[in-house]
Amino acid sequence: MVSMNHREPFIRAENLRRYFLMGHEVVHALDGVNLTVEKGEFLGVTGPSGSGKSTLLHLLGGLDRATEGHIWVDGRDLSAMDENDLAAYRRKEVGFVFQSFFLIPTMTALQNVEFPMFFARIPPAQRRERALHLLERVGLADRRNHRPTELSGGEQQRVAIARALANDPAMILADEPTGNLDSRTGAEVMSLLQELNAEGRTIIIVSHDPAMIAYTRRRIRLLDGQIVGDE
Image (cartoon, rainbow, N blue to C red):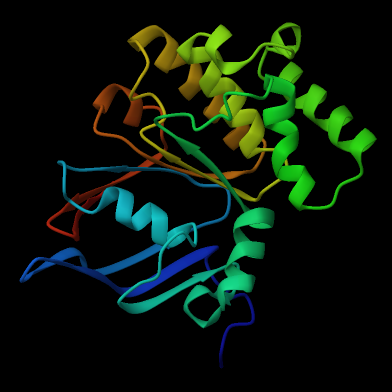
């Protein structure tokens, strides 16, 4: 008898391959990755430069397409989505945090956090209220009218995390989120991600820093586009 308690993982990647052509050479950024991630996990992805860490994150976030294989997120096959479907997936389901912050320099912290909600067609008053709440959540309510150049690196990254939460995504993908920060500020950012994970969000971070990866609850190691460790 088939068990009725079988539950699909939140993320399932099968035989994931991503090849790039560089000149006359084919680079195997990912070479047959199989991975499952349960809802609410805090997963760290580590490995040397060029091992495929960022490529994997970009595929999970719908920023890029696999050359071969499939990714299912919450039961949906990303490879079957057209560009409009992928844009909606990124907007509604995923919050991105990058090493370089990517804040809009002409906008205040408040406006940067509001920005993703504009594309989700959230009314202006509701956008402002939620953005203020999120800035308060990351400890920056008093800096809401400052532009990125008036904020420290740690403050900019916290604004970026607030922006990632703007549309209440189920998953946060963070690519070297502490790479431009000193160790103390990096630890503060990782503690904030821990808190968000404790609230039930699935969080996947890429980092080469063992001190930052130590904050995660599960770690996989990539080498030459393949998973060589999972603990």
